Amino acid sequence: MRRTYLDWNATAPPLDAVIEAMRDAAREAWGNPSSIHGEGRLARAKVEEARAAVAALAGCDVRDVVLTSGGTEANNLAVRSFFADGPGVLVTSRLEHPSVGRVAEVLESAGTRTVWLDARPDGTIDVAGLSRALEACGAERVLVAVQAVNGETGVVQPVDEVLALARGRSHASSAETRVHVDAVQAWGKLESVAADADTRSLAAHKLRGPKGIGALVAREGVTIRPVLVGGSQERGVRPGTVDPVAAAGLGVAAAHARTSPTRYARIAPLRDALECAIVDLAAGAQVNGGAARRVAHVTNVSLPGWIGAELVAALDLEGVAVASGSACSAGTIEPSPVIRAMHGEERARGAVRASLGETTTEGDIEHAIAAFRRVLGRVSL
Image (cartoon, rainbow, N blue to C red; front, side, top):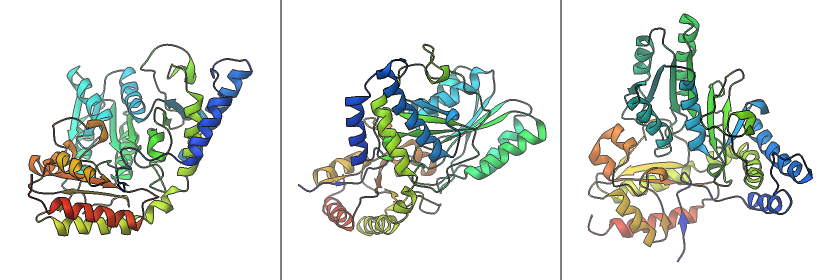
């Protein structure tokens, strides 16, 4: 059976060049990068090449790149690090990835004051609400955690407005206001990715690299406190041996991502064709986030009478891979908290996401539309 993969936001298929680089590294650079002998130096070179590639992608100094096990660890490190320096206020929303949202819930249950911003129906955060929240914080330290691109809807968040409000507060009152941007879904899709943020997260497997490695990028002068304790790797910020094989893949993927936004921009007509077809095929179907600025490759549609996860399963049997929420929430019975925050429980229950990639073809979209036509032509579940 032909397979059409439309779940690039969950993970992107690795580049051939990534696989080759990792294969070579596994043969030649398998040593411990912390060791000072020849084998260790070969491994260390792969790690530092990856760090340099991430720095070039992010437009920062190599010294401001901390390699992690992926986006989840990078988000945890950024958020938890801020509160390691003392109490403060966390401002975020229910639109965030679980690696931010659940950390916020844990911190809140432990006594950290947490402000949950409203989600607007278009899928963006309430910037006016953020302004009021910052004003109400007085002289307290504040961390604002916001994503660059929502992984479920593709909506681009108003990060520039968030940064302007945070910087304005810092200048007006000298109260520390840090902004962490979960940029995992933005690298390689947008030309500029929150360059003025205090911290930004990255995951290699969203860039057609390997799983198990990512990075936290800090603005010059921003101090990151370790969350884990152990060795002195990553200048003591993130203990644990970095895998030079995964690092080799990250380096290639990060270099590729520097030229990816142009390729992704060309996908918009394919995304639009698929989206229009789904809406035409399902009575009452509604696009989630369609009124906001979105990245070019993502569509999220709610279909009345269907349960998203069951629709995903039915399409899989037809040879088409889509999703019903964040991959990190897969296996749960709860509807997408993102769509719930935007539109409520019922619309969240029937939401399905298709995320295209730079190798998606017109033939893939024709195949997907035919699969949707067959599945949606059946009796609703």
